Image 1 (tube, rainbow, N blue to C red):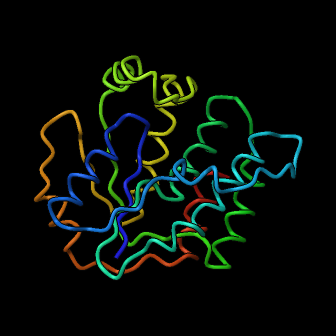
Image 2 (cartoon, rainbow, N blue to C red):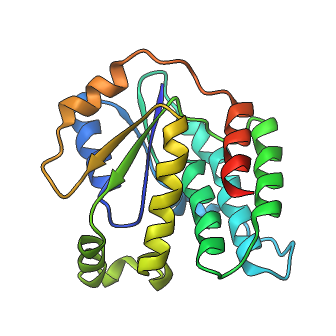
Image 3 (cartoon, rainbow, N blue to C red):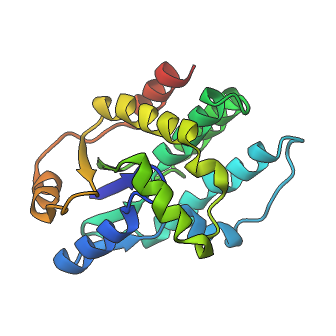
Length: 206
């Protein structure tokens, strides 16, 4: 079983995953950025964002090798990539939806994208994220990810898409109830098909 944790930067996703992994001996699979240096940058377009997004799409092929037979906690799924593309459009920065959906579909069809069984959406107030960003310059997070308009777009996208998928919200501003997350993981639910994923994204993004 694969449980992904998605949401805005600095919402505490990784901290929650690591604590949950330690408490329950679940398998932890790091986020995309931890593998980025293993993916060669290809200039397939004059649009840098397309070239960079392709690198992120390719990373799931590497992360698939870390999936165990037990419960796997995935730090960000394809939803985070999709939310970014959506936010770029919403904030008026650029529109790469057509290219992204076509490429994601290609990788879904070839089995190179990890499709989680369930989704946990980590949230907190924008002011908390901004303070965490200001106090953690060493992380090197791009300023775009903590712009309020971008933050709201990511939040909007996830709230729409997760109504259509087996999901659970975690507010990291308060004490996280790990027992409730474990209950959510343990609950029997039908597996999401890759065809459903593509349709959901097209309905929301196009």
